[in-house]
Amino acid sequence: MNQSYIETKHSINNSVYHGHYRVVFKDEPHLEYLYGVTRGRKNVVQFCEKEILISGERTTDKNNHSEKNCIGYLDNR
Image (cartoon, rainbow, N blue to C red; front, side, top):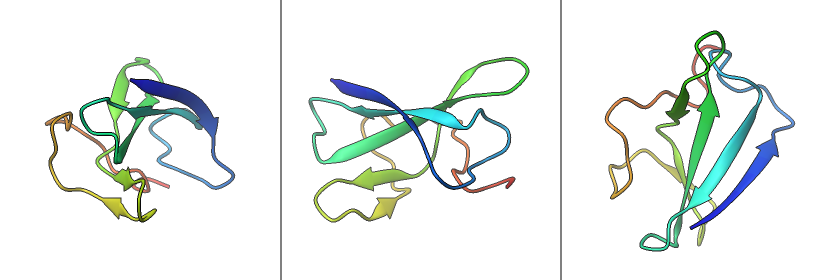
């Protein structure tokens, strides 16, 4: 697993803090999952959008590490 903390230059979902985490799992090295920390309760949540590293495109398709209760990356801006 490869992970890193990032702060975007643009606005994301206001339900989470601005900085978030990128995670690439060993069994899915072509996908980058994004996680954030919610304001208030400070729960870790997965964003529904994942980046396909080969093309740089985003997808919301369900994959091995997709969580049932994800939130939209650009929702609630």
